[in-house]
Length: 477
Image 1 (cartoon, rainbow, N blue to C red):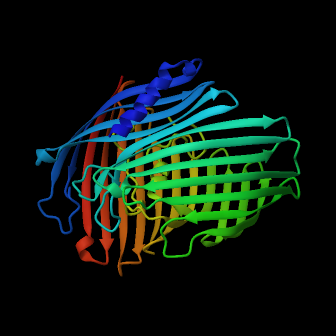
Image 2: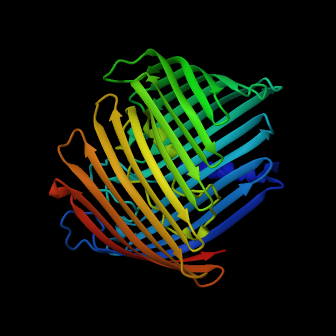
Image 3: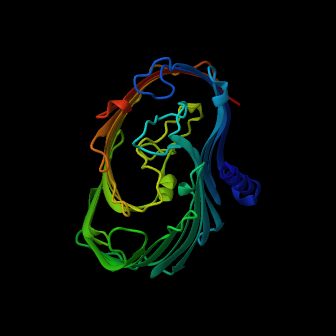
Protein backbone atom coordinates (compact mmCIF):
# COMPACT_ATOMS: atom_id res chain seq x y z
CA UNK A 1 0.00 0.00 0.00
CA UNK A 2 2.35 2.68 -1.19
CA UNK A 3 -0.45 5.26 -1.05
CA UNK A 4 -0.98 4.64 2.65
CA UNK A 5 2.70 5.30 3.26
CA UNK A 6 2.53 8.40 1.05
CA UNK A 7 -0.35 9.85 3.04
CA UNK A 8 1.38 9.11 6.34
CA UNK A 9 4.58 10.73 5.05
CA UNK A 10 2.73 13.90 4.06
CA UNK A 11 1.00 13.97 7.44
CA UNK A 12 4.34 13.57 9.23
CA UNK A 13 5.77 16.43 7.17
CA UNK A 14 2.94 18.68 8.33
CA UNK A 15 3.58 17.67 11.93
CA UNK A 16 7.26 18.49 11.55
CA UNK A 17 6.52 21.91 10.11
CA UNK A 18 5.53 24.93 12.13
CA UNK A 19 1.81 24.63 11.42
CA UNK A 20 1.03 22.52 14.50
CA UNK A 21 2.10 24.97 17.20
CA UNK A 22 -0.47 25.88 19.86
CA UNK A 23 -2.61 22.88 18.92
CA UNK A 24 -4.48 20.52 21.21
CA UNK A 25 -3.19 17.08 20.22
CA UNK A 26 -4.17 13.61 21.37
CA UNK A 27 -1.80 10.90 20.19
CA UNK A 28 -2.38 7.30 21.27
CA UNK A 29 -0.20 4.43 19.99
CA UNK A 30 -1.37 0.93 20.86
CA UNK A 31 -0.92 -2.76 20.14
CA UNK A 32 -3.65 -5.41 20.08
CA UNK A 33 -3.27 -9.17 20.11
CA UNK A 34 -6.28 -11.33 19.37
CA UNK A 35 -7.50 -14.77 18.54
CA UNK A 36 -10.59 -15.84 16.61
CA UNK A 37 -12.30 -19.20 16.23
CA UNK A 38 -14.63 -19.49 13.23
CA UNK A 39 -16.62 -22.46 11.99
CA UNK A 40 -16.75 -21.22 8.36
CA UNK A 41 -13.62 -19.29 7.46
CA UNK A 42 -14.31 -19.53 3.71
CA UNK A 43 -18.01 -18.54 3.89
CA UNK A 44 -18.96 -21.72 2.06
CA UNK A 45 -22.46 -23.08 1.55
CA UNK A 46 -23.16 -26.12 3.72
CA UNK A 47 -19.67 -25.78 5.17
CA UNK A 48 -18.12 -28.84 6.75
CA UNK A 49 -14.55 -29.05 8.05
CA UNK A 50 -14.15 -25.33 7.35
CA UNK A 51 -13.12 -24.36 10.87
CA UNK A 52 -10.10 -22.21 11.58
CA UNK A 53 -8.21 -20.50 14.39
CA UNK A 54 -6.90 -17.08 13.43
CA UNK A 55 -4.31 -15.09 15.35
CA UNK A 56 -3.90 -11.32 14.97
CA UNK A 57 -1.22 -8.86 16.04
CA UNK A 58 -2.18 -5.26 15.35
CA UNK A 59 -0.05 -2.24 16.21
CA UNK A 60 -1.88 1.00 15.57
CA UNK A 61 -2.17 4.68 16.33
CA UNK A 62 -4.94 7.25 16.68
CA UNK A 63 -4.35 11.00 16.42
CA UNK A 64 -6.73 13.90 16.94
CA UNK A 65 -5.53 17.49 16.64
CA UNK A 66 -7.08 20.94 16.48
CA UNK A 67 -4.92 24.05 16.20
CA UNK A 68 -4.82 27.51 14.71
CA UNK A 69 -3.18 26.25 11.50
CA UNK A 70 -3.82 22.49 11.36
CA UNK A 71 -6.66 20.15 12.26
CA UNK A 72 -6.25 16.42 11.65
CA UNK A 73 -7.75 13.01 12.35
CA UNK A 74 -5.71 9.85 11.82
CA UNK A 75 -6.50 6.21 12.57
CA UNK A 76 -4.19 3.45 11.38
CA UNK A 77 -3.94 -0.29 12.00
CA UNK A 78 -1.19 -2.59 10.71
CA UNK A 79 -2.90 -5.94 11.11
CA UNK A 80 -0.95 -9.19 10.89
CA UNK A 81 -3.25 -12.19 10.38
CA UNK A 82 -2.16 -15.84 10.70
CA UNK A 83 -4.42 -18.81 9.89
CA UNK A 84 -3.01 -21.56 12.12
CA UNK A 85 -4.39 -24.41 10.00
CA UNK A 86 -3.09 -22.88 6.74
CA UNK A 87 -0.13 -20.66 7.51
CA UNK A 88 0.52 -19.98 3.80
CA UNK A 89 -2.62 -17.82 3.73
CA UNK A 90 -1.29 -15.48 6.40
CA UNK A 91 -1.27 -11.83 5.38
CA UNK A 92 -0.80 -8.24 6.50
CA UNK A 93 -3.72 -5.78 6.23
CA UNK A 94 -3.56 -2.00 6.26
CA UNK A 95 -6.49 0.02 7.62
CA UNK A 96 -6.06 3.77 7.33
CA UNK A 97 -8.32 6.78 7.66
CA UNK A 98 -6.75 10.23 7.43
CA UNK A 99 -8.21 13.70 7.01
CA UNK A 100 -6.54 17.05 7.62
CA UNK A 101 -7.02 20.75 6.92
CA UNK A 102 -4.04 23.10 6.91
CA UNK A 103 -4.44 26.89 6.91
CA UNK A 104 -1.53 27.91 4.68
CA UNK A 105 -2.63 31.56 4.70
CA UNK A 106 -5.24 31.87 7.48
CA UNK A 107 -8.55 33.09 6.17
CA UNK A 108 -7.50 32.78 2.53
CA UNK A 109 -5.58 29.67 1.45
CA UNK A 110 -6.11 26.18 2.88
CA UNK A 111 -5.18 22.62 1.98
CA UNK A 112 -7.49 19.65 2.61
CA UNK A 113 -5.97 16.18 2.43
CA UNK A 114 -7.35 12.69 2.92
CA UNK A 115 -6.35 9.09 2.50
CA UNK A 116 -7.77 5.66 3.22
CA UNK A 117 -6.91 2.00 2.95
CA UNK A 118 -9.02 -1.01 3.81
CA UNK A 119 -10.34 -4.32 2.49
CA UNK A 120 -13.42 -4.20 0.27
CA UNK A 121 -15.61 -6.60 -1.66
CA UNK A 122 -15.22 -7.05 -5.41
CA UNK A 123 -18.64 -8.42 -6.38
CA UNK A 124 -21.72 -7.98 -4.20
CA UNK A 125 -23.37 -11.00 -5.83
CA UNK A 126 -20.66 -13.38 -4.48
CA UNK A 127 -20.00 -14.42 -0.84
CA UNK A 128 -18.45 -11.68 1.31
CA UNK A 129 -18.10 -10.89 5.00
CA UNK A 130 -18.03 -7.76 7.12
CA UNK A 131 -14.56 -8.45 8.54
CA UNK A 132 -11.19 -9.11 6.91
CA UNK A 133 -10.67 -12.42 8.74
CA UNK A 134 -12.27 -14.67 6.13
CA UNK A 135 -10.51 -16.50 3.31
CA UNK A 136 -12.23 -15.14 0.23
CA UNK A 137 -11.32 -14.29 -3.34
CA UNK A 138 -14.11 -11.70 -3.23
CA UNK A 139 -12.16 -9.27 -1.05
CA UNK A 140 -9.08 -7.21 -1.86
CA UNK A 141 -7.09 -4.19 -0.71
CA UNK A 142 -8.25 -0.74 -1.79
CA UNK A 143 -6.62 2.63 -1.19
CA UNK A 144 -7.25 6.24 -2.12
CA UNK A 145 -5.56 9.60 -1.74
CA UNK A 146 -6.89 13.13 -2.25
CA UNK A 147 -5.53 16.68 -1.95
CA UNK A 148 -7.46 19.89 -2.43
CA UNK A 149 -6.14 23.46 -2.06
CA UNK A 150 -8.85 26.13 -1.66
CA UNK A 151 -8.79 29.91 -1.84
CA UNK A 152 -11.22 32.39 -0.28
CA UNK A 153 -11.43 36.16 -0.71
CA UNK A 154 -14.00 38.45 0.88
CA UNK A 155 -15.10 41.60 -0.92
CA UNK A 156 -15.99 43.51 2.22
CA UNK A 157 -19.54 42.70 3.29
CA UNK A 158 -20.78 42.47 -0.32
CA UNK A 159 -19.59 39.07 -1.58
CA UNK A 160 -17.31 36.09 -0.93
CA UNK A 161 -15.22 34.36 -3.60
CA UNK A 162 -14.36 30.66 -3.14
CA UNK A 163 -12.22 28.63 -5.54
CA UNK A 164 -10.62 25.22 -5.29
CA UNK A 165 -8.87 22.45 -7.19
CA UNK A 166 -8.70 18.80 -6.18
CA UNK A 167 -6.78 15.72 -7.24
CA UNK A 168 -7.59 12.18 -6.12
CA UNK A 169 -6.53 8.65 -6.96
CA UNK A 170 -7.77 5.17 -6.08
CA UNK A 171 -6.00 1.81 -6.32
CA UNK A 172 -7.50 -1.66 -6.13
CA UNK A 173 -5.03 -4.51 -5.71
CA UNK A 174 -5.04 -6.82 -8.73
CA UNK A 175 -7.88 -5.02 -10.51
CA UNK A 176 -7.11 -2.31 -13.05
CA UNK A 177 -10.81 -1.43 -13.17
CA UNK A 178 -10.46 0.17 -9.75
CA UNK A 179 -7.36 2.23 -10.60
CA UNK A 180 -9.06 5.56 -11.14
CA UNK A 181 -7.88 9.17 -10.99
CA UNK A 182 -9.92 12.29 -10.54
CA UNK A 183 -9.58 16.05 -10.89
CA UNK A 184 -12.13 18.66 -9.94
CA UNK A 185 -12.37 22.43 -9.81
CA UNK A 186 -14.93 24.87 -8.52
CA UNK A 187 -15.50 28.64 -8.40
CA UNK A 188 -18.33 30.41 -6.60
CA UNK A 189 -19.29 33.96 -5.79
CA UNK A 190 -21.83 34.25 -2.98
CA UNK A 191 -23.55 37.11 -1.19
CA UNK A 192 -22.03 38.66 1.92
CA UNK A 193 -23.55 40.01 5.11
CA UNK A 194 -25.09 42.95 3.24
CA UNK A 195 -27.74 40.53 2.01
CA UNK A 196 -30.11 39.19 4.68
CA UNK A 197 -33.61 38.55 3.35
CA UNK A 198 -32.30 37.76 -0.17
CA UNK A 199 -29.06 35.81 -0.61
CA UNK A 200 -27.53 34.65 -3.90
CA UNK A 201 -24.63 32.72 -5.40
CA UNK A 202 -23.06 32.01 -8.79
CA UNK A 203 -21.43 28.58 -9.03
CA UNK A 204 -19.31 26.60 -11.47
CA UNK A 205 -17.92 23.10 -11.00
CA UNK A 206 -15.99 20.68 -13.19
CA UNK A 207 -15.06 17.08 -12.42
CA UNK A 208 -13.01 14.68 -14.53
CA UNK A 209 -12.69 11.02 -13.62
CA UNK A 210 -9.91 9.16 -15.45
CA UNK A 211 -10.60 5.45 -15.39
CA UNK A 212 -7.65 3.08 -15.97
CA UNK A 213 -6.02 2.21 -19.26
CA UNK A 214 -9.26 1.30 -21.03
CA UNK A 215 -10.03 4.98 -21.52
CA UNK A 216 -13.47 5.28 -19.98
CA UNK A 217 -13.01 8.88 -18.90
CA UNK A 218 -15.96 10.72 -17.39
CA UNK A 219 -16.58 14.49 -17.33
CA UNK A 220 -19.18 16.34 -15.24
CA UNK A 221 -19.68 20.08 -15.63
CA UNK A 222 -22.27 22.36 -14.05
CA UNK A 223 -22.97 26.10 -13.86
CA UNK A 224 -25.84 27.45 -11.74
CA UNK A 225 -27.25 30.64 -10.25
CA UNK A 226 -28.97 30.29 -6.88
CA UNK A 227 -31.18 32.56 -4.79
CA UNK A 228 -32.69 32.19 -1.33
CA UNK A 229 -35.57 34.42 -0.22
CA UNK A 230 -36.60 34.76 3.44
CA UNK A 231 -40.41 34.58 3.55
CA UNK A 232 -40.41 34.71 7.37
CA UNK A 233 -37.83 34.38 10.12
CA UNK A 234 -38.22 30.60 9.89
CA UNK A 235 -39.04 29.90 6.23
CA UNK A 236 -36.86 30.47 3.16
CA UNK A 237 -37.70 29.89 -0.49
CA UNK A 238 -34.78 28.45 -2.51
CA UNK A 239 -34.31 28.27 -6.25
CA UNK A 240 -31.61 27.63 -8.84
CA UNK A 241 -31.20 27.41 -12.59
CA UNK A 242 -28.30 26.61 -14.86
CA UNK A 243 -26.68 24.26 -17.32
CA UNK A 244 -25.25 20.75 -16.90
CA UNK A 245 -22.89 19.11 -19.42
CA UNK A 246 -21.81 15.49 -18.90
CA UNK A 247 -19.68 13.21 -21.03
CA UNK A 248 -19.32 9.50 -20.24
CA UNK A 249 -20.12 6.11 -21.75
CA UNK A 250 -23.87 5.62 -21.38
CA UNK A 251 -26.76 3.76 -22.96
CA UNK A 252 -28.84 6.91 -22.57
CA UNK A 253 -28.36 10.31 -24.23
CA UNK A 254 -25.79 12.57 -22.55
CA UNK A 255 -24.73 16.11 -23.27
CA UNK A 256 -25.86 19.61 -22.35
CA UNK A 257 -29.14 20.14 -20.53
CA UNK A 258 -30.86 23.01 -18.74
CA UNK A 259 -31.34 22.24 -15.05
CA UNK A 260 -33.37 23.84 -12.26
CA UNK A 261 -34.55 23.29 -8.71
CA UNK A 262 -36.97 24.85 -6.26
CA UNK A 263 -37.70 24.19 -2.62
CA UNK A 264 -38.18 25.37 0.95
CA UNK A 265 -36.12 25.46 4.14
CA UNK A 266 -38.08 25.52 7.39
CA UNK A 267 -36.40 26.01 10.77
CA UNK A 268 -39.16 25.95 13.41
CA UNK A 269 -36.53 26.06 16.17
CA UNK A 270 -32.78 26.08 16.72
CA UNK A 271 -32.95 22.30 17.16
CA UNK A 272 -34.96 21.43 14.05
CA UNK A 273 -34.39 22.04 10.33
CA UNK A 274 -36.35 20.74 7.34
CA UNK A 275 -35.37 21.33 3.72
CA UNK A 276 -36.82 19.84 0.54
CA UNK A 277 -36.51 20.48 -3.17
CA UNK A 278 -37.68 19.29 -6.55
CA UNK A 279 -36.00 19.97 -9.86
CA UNK A 280 -34.58 18.69 -13.11
CA UNK A 281 -31.11 17.24 -13.71
CA UNK A 282 -29.48 15.65 -16.76
CA UNK A 283 -30.95 12.26 -15.81
CA UNK A 284 -34.49 13.58 -15.27
CA UNK A 285 -36.59 14.67 -12.30
CA UNK A 286 -34.57 15.25 -9.14
CA UNK A 287 -35.66 15.30 -5.49
CA UNK A 288 -33.90 16.01 -2.20
CA UNK A 289 -34.91 15.98 1.47
CA UNK A 290 -33.03 16.75 4.68
CA UNK A 291 -34.62 16.64 8.14
CA UNK A 292 -32.66 17.02 11.36
CA UNK A 293 -33.76 17.34 14.97
CA UNK A 294 -31.48 17.29 17.97
CA UNK A 295 -32.01 17.56 21.69
CA UNK A 296 -29.63 16.93 24.54
CA UNK A 297 -30.22 13.17 24.50
CA UNK A 298 -31.97 12.52 21.18
CA UNK A 299 -30.85 13.05 17.57
CA UNK A 300 -33.02 12.28 14.52
CA UNK A 301 -32.19 12.67 10.85
CA UNK A 302 -33.81 11.75 7.53
CA UNK A 303 -32.07 12.29 4.20
CA UNK A 304 -32.76 11.60 0.55
CA UNK A 305 -30.53 12.51 -2.38
CA UNK A 306 -29.80 11.66 -6.00
CA UNK A 307 -26.62 12.08 -8.01
CA UNK A 308 -24.15 10.47 -10.37
CA UNK A 309 -21.43 8.49 -8.60
CA UNK A 310 -18.22 6.66 -9.46
CA UNK A 311 -16.33 3.95 -7.60
CA UNK A 312 -13.60 6.46 -6.73
CA UNK A 313 -16.16 8.79 -5.20
CA UNK A 314 -17.64 6.04 -3.05
CA UNK A 315 -14.23 5.00 -1.72
CA UNK A 316 -13.61 8.57 -0.56
CA UNK A 317 -17.00 8.75 1.17
CA UNK A 318 -16.57 5.50 3.13
CA UNK A 319 -16.07 6.07 6.86
CA UNK A 320 -14.36 3.24 8.74
CA UNK A 321 -13.86 5.05 12.04
CA UNK A 322 -16.37 7.77 13.00
CA UNK A 323 -14.69 10.90 14.39
CA UNK A 324 -17.99 12.47 15.51
CA UNK A 325 -20.91 10.83 17.28
CA UNK A 326 -24.57 11.30 16.33
CA UNK A 327 -24.69 14.45 18.47
CA UNK A 328 -21.67 16.05 16.80
CA UNK A 329 -19.29 15.37 19.68
CA UNK A 330 -15.69 14.32 18.90
CA UNK A 331 -14.86 10.63 19.37
CA UNK A 332 -11.44 9.52 20.55
CA UNK A 333 -11.48 5.83 21.37
CA UNK A 334 -8.11 4.11 20.93
CA UNK A 335 -9.48 0.93 22.59
CA UNK A 336 -11.26 -0.25 19.46
CA UNK A 337 -8.46 -2.72 18.68
CA UNK A 338 -9.19 -4.66 15.48
CA UNK A 339 -12.98 -4.41 15.66
CA UNK A 340 -13.33 -2.36 12.48
CA UNK A 341 -16.32 -3.62 10.50
CA UNK A 342 -16.02 -3.32 6.73
CA UNK A 343 -18.80 -1.83 4.58
CA UNK A 344 -21.15 -4.42 3.07
CA UNK A 345 -23.28 -2.03 1.00
CA UNK A 346 -20.57 -1.15 -1.55
CA UNK A 347 -21.38 -1.71 -5.23
CA UNK A 348 -19.61 -4.26 -7.38
CA UNK A 349 -16.24 -2.93 -8.56
CA UNK A 350 -16.88 -1.15 -11.86
CA UNK A 351 -15.54 1.69 -13.98
CA UNK A 352 -19.07 2.64 -15.05
CA UNK A 353 -20.88 5.76 -13.89
CA UNK A 354 -24.03 4.94 -11.99
CA UNK A 355 -27.00 6.93 -10.79
CA UNK A 356 -27.56 6.60 -7.05
CA UNK A 357 -30.83 7.34 -5.24
CA UNK A 358 -30.37 6.94 -1.49
CA UNK A 359 -32.63 7.17 1.56
CA UNK A 360 -31.14 7.24 5.04
CA UNK A 361 -32.82 7.66 8.43
CA UNK A 362 -31.26 7.49 11.90
CA UNK A 363 -32.29 7.78 15.54
CA UNK A 364 -29.86 8.09 18.45
CA UNK A 365 -30.57 8.16 22.17
CA UNK A 366 -28.00 8.79 24.85
CA UNK A 367 -28.28 8.32 28.61
CA UNK A 368 -25.70 8.34 31.38
CA UNK A 369 -24.89 4.62 31.01
CA UNK A 370 -26.56 3.74 27.71
CA UNK A 371 -26.22 4.73 24.08
CA UNK A 372 -28.70 3.43 21.50
CA UNK A 373 -28.71 4.06 17.76
CA UNK A 374 -30.95 2.81 14.97
CA UNK A 375 -30.57 3.49 11.26
CA UNK A 376 -32.25 2.38 8.05
CA UNK A 377 -31.20 2.90 4.45
CA UNK A 378 -32.12 2.14 0.87
CA UNK A 379 -29.77 2.67 -2.07
CA UNK A 380 -30.94 2.24 -5.65
CA UNK A 381 -27.92 2.18 -8.01
CA UNK A 382 -28.24 1.92 -11.78
CA UNK A 383 -25.20 1.66 -14.04
CA UNK A 384 -25.30 4.03 -16.97
CA UNK A 385 -23.71 1.74 -19.58
CA UNK A 386 -24.97 -1.78 -18.84
CA UNK A 387 -28.17 -0.50 -17.13
CA UNK A 388 -27.68 -3.17 -14.44
CA UNK A 389 -29.52 -2.09 -11.32
CA UNK A 390 -29.05 -3.19 -7.73
CA UNK A 391 -31.22 -2.13 -4.80
CA UNK A 392 -29.82 -2.46 -1.29
CA UNK A 393 -32.13 -2.03 1.70
CA UNK A 394 -30.92 -2.42 5.25
CA UNK A 395 -31.09 -1.49 8.92
CA UNK A 396 -28.60 -1.44 11.79
CA UNK A 397 -29.06 -1.19 15.56
CA UNK A 398 -26.43 -0.68 18.26
CA UNK A 399 -26.82 -0.65 22.03
CA UNK A 400 -23.94 0.08 24.40
CA UNK A 401 -24.25 -0.14 28.21
CA UNK A 402 -21.63 0.90 30.76
CA UNK A 403 -22.02 -1.63 33.55
CA UNK A 404 -19.28 0.11 35.53
CA UNK A 405 -16.19 2.18 34.88
CA UNK A 406 -14.37 -1.00 33.91
CA UNK A 407 -17.07 -3.06 32.15
CA UNK A 408 -18.98 -2.22 28.96
CA UNK A 409 -21.41 -4.42 27.05
CA UNK A 410 -22.44 -3.86 23.45
CA UNK A 411 -24.87 -5.40 20.96
CA UNK A 412 -24.68 -4.86 17.19
CA UNK A 413 -27.44 -6.11 14.88
CA UNK A 414 -27.75 -5.46 11.16
CA UNK A 415 -29.85 -6.82 8.30
CA UNK A 416 -29.60 -6.14 4.58
CA UNK A 417 -31.54 -7.21 1.49
CA UNK A 418 -30.04 -6.94 -2.00
CA UNK A 419 -31.83 -7.24 -5.34
CA UNK A 420 -30.13 -7.38 -8.74
CA UNK A 421 -31.75 -6.69 -12.11
CA UNK A 422 -29.49 -9.22 -13.88
CA UNK A 423 -30.53 -12.02 -11.49
CA UNK A 424 -33.91 -13.49 -10.70
CA UNK A 425 -33.03 -14.01 -7.03
CA UNK A 426 -32.02 -11.79 -4.12
CA UNK A 427 -29.94 -12.05 -0.97
CA UNK A 428 -30.45 -11.39 2.73
CA UNK A 429 -27.58 -10.73 5.15
CA UNK A 430 -27.95 -10.93 8.93
CA UNK A 431 -25.26 -9.96 11.44
CA UNK A 432 -25.60 -10.25 15.24
CA UNK A 433 -22.67 -9.56 17.57
CA UNK A 434 -22.79 -9.19 21.38
CA UNK A 435 -19.52 -8.18 23.05
CA UNK A 436 -18.02 -7.46 26.44
CA UNK A 437 -15.01 -5.24 27.17
CA UNK A 438 -13.10 -4.84 30.41
CA UNK A 439 -10.45 -2.32 31.52
CA UNK A 440 -7.80 -4.05 33.60
CA UNK A 441 -6.08 -0.73 34.25
CA UNK A 442 -5.22 2.57 32.66
CA UNK A 443 -3.26 0.99 29.82
CA UNK A 444 -4.63 -2.53 29.43
CA UNK A 445 -8.07 -3.63 28.27
CA UNK A 446 -9.63 -6.80 26.90
CA UNK A 447 -12.71 -7.78 24.92
CA UNK A 448 -14.68 -10.90 24.11
CA UNK A 449 -17.19 -10.99 21.26
CA UNK A 450 -19.38 -13.44 19.37
CA UNK A 451 -20.36 -12.95 15.73
CA UNK A 452 -23.23 -14.62 13.88
CA UNK A 453 -23.19 -13.89 10.15
CA UNK A 454 -25.66 -15.45 7.73
CA UNK A 455 -26.52 -15.06 4.09
CA UNK A 456 -29.87 -16.32 2.78
CA UNK A 457 -30.34 -16.51 -0.98
CA UNK A 458 -32.97 -17.83 -3.37
CA UNK A 459 -30.06 -19.84 -4.77
CA UNK A 460 -29.08 -22.28 -2.00
CA UNK A 461 -25.54 -22.43 -3.40
CA UNK A 462 -25.07 -18.89 -2.13
CA UNK A 463 -26.28 -19.62 1.41
CA UNK A 464 -23.78 -19.71 4.26
CA UNK A 465 -23.59 -19.29 8.02
CA UNK A 466 -20.61 -18.30 10.15
CA UNK A 467 -20.22 -18.41 13.92
CA UNK A 468 -17.09 -16.79 15.32
CA UNK A 469 -15.71 -15.96 18.76
CA UNK A 470 -12.94 -13.37 19.18
CA UNK A 471 -10.88 -12.37 22.20
CA UNK A 472 -8.47 -9.42 22.25
CA UNK A 473 -6.04 -7.65 24.57
CA UNK A 474 -5.06 -4.04 23.87
CA UNK A 475 -2.19 -2.17 25.47
CA UNK A 476 -1.92 1.62 25.24
CA UNK A 477 1.56 3.13 25.26
